[in-house]
Each structure stands twice: as C-alpha cells, then as structure tokens.
Amino acid sequence: MAVINYITQIQFEYGAVKLLQAECDRLAVARPMLVTDAGVRAAGLVDKVLAQLKNASAVGVFDQTPPNPTEAAMRVALQLYRDGKFDGLIAVGGGSAMDLAKAVAVCATHDGPLKNFAVVEGGVARITAATATVIAIPTTAGTGSEVGRGSMMILDDGRKVGILSPFIVPKSAICDPELTLGLPALLTAATGMDAITHCMETFMSPALNFPAEGIALDGLWRGWAHIERATKHGDDKEARLHMMSASTQGAMAFQKGLGAVHSLSHAIGGMNPKLHHGTLNAMFLPAVINFNASAESMKQANKLERIAHAMGLSAQSDVSSAVKAMNQRLGLPSGLAEMGVTEAMYPAIIQSAMQDHCHKTNVRIATEADYAQILRESM
Image (cartoon, rainbow, N blue to C red; front, side, top):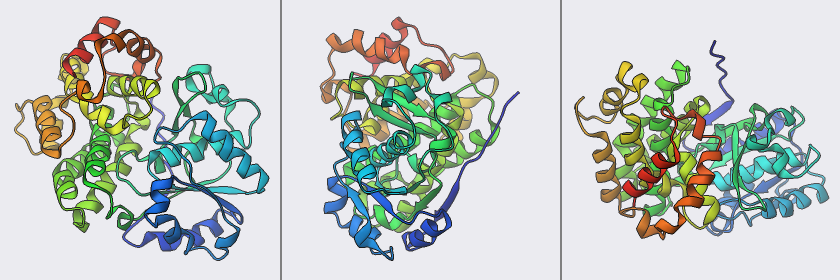
C-alpha cells in the first residue's frame, strides 16, 4: 500500500517576499532567527528580507552557513538561537542555509547530538512535532529544500547524512523568483541541473507515488526547456520563474525517493565539502541513467521514453547523451576528474555510497562493482 502526503503551504510569485510578515503572524513566529550565508548577505538579499518585517532589529542573523552545512556550524547557530530565545527560523539562501536551519530546528527542541537524528542512525522516529517552525525563502533554483522533508548535514565524523522527517518540512515556503535574478551563470547552471536531476531520478525510483511522478515530469519539462535561457540570460524573468518551479517541483517529487546519483554525490560531498552538490549530480546523472535503463520497472513503464518526451526529445533519443551535451553547453565540468576526483578515492566513495539513505531507493540496487563502473564512466 502506498501512503502519499503533500506537503506544505507555498507562496509562489514575483514579489512573494512581501508576504513574510503575514506568514510569521500566521505561524505565530514573533522572534525569528534568520539563517543564511555570507554571499547571500553580501548580495543584499538579507536586507531585502528583513525589510519585510515589522521588528527587523530584533531578528537574530546567522550568516556563516558553509557551502555544505556542517554539524560544527549548526552548533554555533543553535547557541545563537538559544541565547536569543527565538521562537522560529527564517532560512534565506540555497539548500545549505535551509538544511542548516532545519537541523537547528530539530536540535533546539530535542535532546542529543545531531547524529541521533540521521536516517542511518535510526533517527526518523526521534524527530517529533516539537521541531521549531521554519519559514524557507530560496534564493537559488536547485535543491527545493523549501518543501523538502530532508536536511543534508556533514557530521563531525565526516559523514554526510540525511536528517529526514515530515516534521522538518518548512511550514511556509516563500518562492520569489526575483531573488534569483542576480544568481551568477555557473551557479544557475549547477543548481538548475540539481533540480533536473531531482525530477529525473525520483521519476526513475520504483516506489509507488504517481502524483510525484507527474510533478517530476512537469518539473523536468520546465527545467530542461529553460535552464539554458536562465544561465545565459540571467535577467530573463520567465526562465527564472520556470527554473524556480522546477526546483520546488523536484523536491515535492523526491518525497518518493532518489537513487544512485545522490548516494554518490553525498559520498563525495562529505569527503570534499567544497564541491558543489548540483554539479556532482550533473556529472553522475548520465552514467546512472545508463545503469538504470535495464531495470524491468523502467522498461515496463516506458520511463526513459517518457523522460525523453518531457525533454522535448524523440522517444528513442539517448537521454544520457543529451544530459552530457547539456552539461557542456552550460559550461559545467567535463567530468569528475576536472573536479579533483581520483581513482584512489573510489573505495571510500563507494563505501559511503553503499551506506547512504538514497542507495536503497534506486531502481536498481548497485553493487560495489556497479558504483565503480559509474564512477569510471563519470570521470
């Protein structure tokens, strides 16, 4: 039996950030703490968000979120939250800021270290409705963490783990494409391929969630049709709107599960937090599409043909090659080697990928040898 739940309240339009105070009032958040990163603050987006609040001077601001959020950074933010006696969090930025805010929301209201709440440590059952309220305002179009039930965090022991629970889904997502207009081209491309990967990989996952599959295909259509325009013409408002929609839809869909792309990306991200998650996804996606193609459930449901249709390709097109060509047109790396990955790293990557929560939801369960082959094809 499939149990399907969707998801949270989303305000989606140009200028939606003006609704922030109303959302705080609706959710009874009187003393929020804002979580962001230094780049978002330097771009003036934090000031733009704070200007929407009646008592902005009382808002705490943590702006030291690293590119891949860590348990150490979370502890600093958590102490600020407790010292300020705040009653909710506003996450402003990309997936890193939103994931760190979710981790603070859990640890502020539950006893124990962060690892206690990781999926691989049996943490899902330990997270309760006591979790602090999070309002999420994305400034990139990629992770969709504003509607996601997960927080990806690097623990003190170096593992990149998922903190997953319906209780950490933000209570409000304010999706204002205007906040993405200044996003640099390469970051637009990398985050956009993150969204496209979410749509493709969750569609391929074998779990039963047909609404998620419909959302994923529509999100894929929007993302694939508009990522080049958004990358090359950053002020294209229509393209930016569609990319933000693709991002949100990708995360709405991946409640269904992801797969080998993400188990490998999480593994490498834990080893080298400086590597961008969306870029890693783009590198792995072609090889994982090839690996998944022979799965019986893929063939029975004509999934590759349906993916190709959403991308505007003919039914018999080589989807894997189309993704590689898109990566090239967007100016992304040619492969993992260009990102500093070496064959000597394979054993550690594979060991971590085998333990990742996304490993078991791939349409084909990869062996160590399978992962090694995917790595070789992605170099």
